[in-house]
Amino acid sequence: MKHDYKRLYLGLDLGTSSLKAIAVDERGVPRGSAGAAYPILGMDKGKAEQDTEAWIGAMSSAARNLAAQGLELSAVAGIGLSGQMPTFVGVDAAGAPLAPAMLWCDARADEAGSRLLEAWGRERHYRSTGVILDGRYIAPMHAWFLSHRPSDSPACAKMLSAKDYLHLRLTGRPCTDPSTASGFGLFSLASGTWDESLCSEAGIDPRLLPELSPSGEESGRLTREGATILGLKPGIPVACGAADSVAGVLGMGAFKPGRICQMAGSSTALVALAEELLLDGHRRYLVTPLALPGSYGLEADILASGASLAWLAGLAGDGQAADRGVLRGEELARLTRLAENQAPGADGLFFFPYLAGGEQSVLWDPGLRGGLSGLSLRHGLGHLARSLYEGLCFEIRRCVAAFEDSRFAPSDMLCTGPISRESFYMQLLADVTGLECRASEAENASALGAAILGGLAAGAWPLSGLPSILPACDGSPYRPRPEAAAIYDSIYPEYASASLASRRGP
Image 1 (cartoon, rainbow, N blue to C red):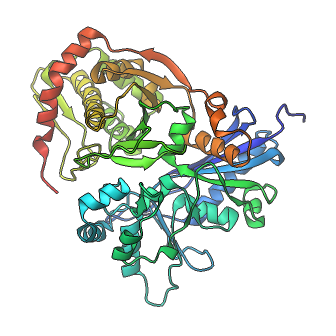
Image 2: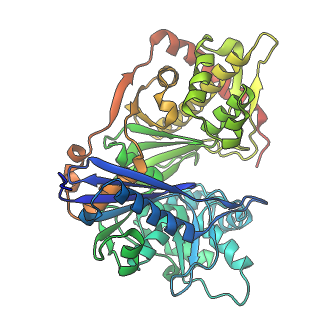
Image 3: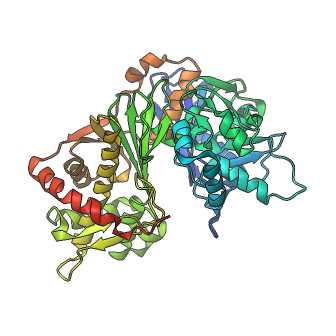
């Protein structure tokens, strides 16, 4: 079969529940996508693990599915990676995993994280790394692993993140990028290298850490083993890529400083694009190096956005939505119809969407719990739906305000995820935040960003040419409506105060 492309660039995004693969041509146009799922193991007593071989099987399966779609995989000339973080994989000297991967949502290392912060000092650590550390980072996970491993097990030779382990299997080289390195809790933003003093005080030999490589540069070549996994030829350039949220920003075509990217699913990640290092004096948000040199992401994550909507949909009649933790299109549309039939302010009802137990965003309070304020007999299911949507938008406004406190000047917001397809939500978001909001048309943004990084590594296009290769996939704009915005300006201070009434402390 004759194809109208000469080269393809493959992006692999290792998510929490599935791996997504996408292939783009030399113009950056997607030509095919595929995915393969794998389970989370354990999920009791704070444990959340995955079998690393399941990841390798998913890579192989996704590549075979692309070939089955008719893609000519012999045309693949570059590979880029993206992945969940921070997820810890410890390997021995031969590169074999010493245990299942500890996922980013594994809570067993919380005590180890507290001990490290006590040794380092919270303010000092944040100033160096831009990280608000807890047990869900790789340094404390490594500490927990060492204290619980059998005495006769091999020594840990390398500390890797999930994506770094894929890179090791594909290229034979332990390597990471700056955005993923930030998830170790040991990466200095100012120097762009591992912080030797933090490593020393944590008792971590820097030789345990992977080498650092820029996101869009060649960091290895596909070995025979890697080629066998993917069904490709050896020698293809590989880019170690970027963290999933950072690759997602690139995949959405977001290059302009001032833009805020919202990536919504079961949870919501907000990444604000800044040209300079803007740390927060109150340590309310994370700072992450972005994929392009000299740019930073101010990041805040809302833990239970889509999951809260799925929970309410379950109460509204479909219990399966709550069990899945995610809404199907028709379920989300039904919830939206209920909400849009109510007036702004939901007749005095506030919904605090902290249903995952605690919250990050800019609150960083594990004691926060979800709740309702102002509930009365006159309220119905529509009010609950409206107040939940409004609560989610109020939380996003709180994050934007924290960014602004650090001299960040927001221009607009670009949104992706199922909820961004609902015009009611997009207009509400604009009214509440006061920003022009657009729904991105990009699909599989993290995998697409990884593919673009693979193309950069292979020399397919220069850094300066990315805006033309990957134009922003912006949909129609939703602009704040003056009357509705004035209502929400008057309501928000009361919400912001009342929402913290469930604060229980650390």
